[in-house]
Image (cartoon, rainbow, N blue to C red; front, side, top):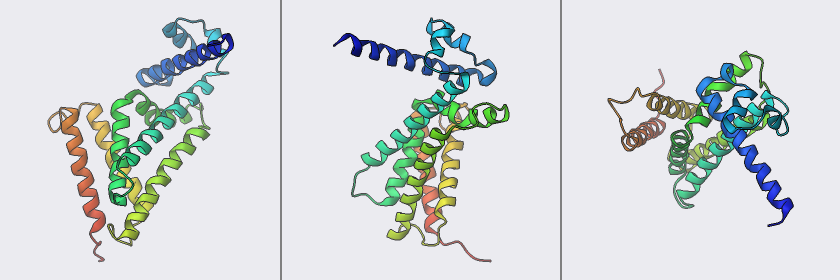
Length: 218
């Protein structure tokens, strides 16, 4: 490995350390406890070094959110691909739900930053333009909407299903479950990850059943 390549790898490694330290602080303390000085203390570098990689705190927060959204999108994609090319669209939708839950359980700090931080950040006037993160979020959402639409065309779900609304309902259900699990509020129902994953599958069963059943008009 040449000197230039080694230096580039070292720079990228340090950048990753900065992002990970920022992620942990944001997850643990929110914006109020977030500072370049605290990040520098954790990675054992000077604050000036951090500014060589990120122009401001806002720039660093954006980098954390973008990385979290990239990982979320990748995990969902991988789970959907693992389901196979020949499964039904309804099963691909279930795979996307499993991917969302897997991401939350295995990347809890990023999960907290993505979904707990942006609203707070905007209220404080910081980090109001997380455009790349929003683009990844929208791409993942559109992928799920597309799969639900295909399931309707295949006849698995009813043809009058509002797929965008259904995608939001499914997301909210899984998000609520995983948030309750991570906060320890499901100890009586699912004390272990394995039991929680069974609960997730049952929830997906119930959602799918509702989308197959025509809504009665009153």
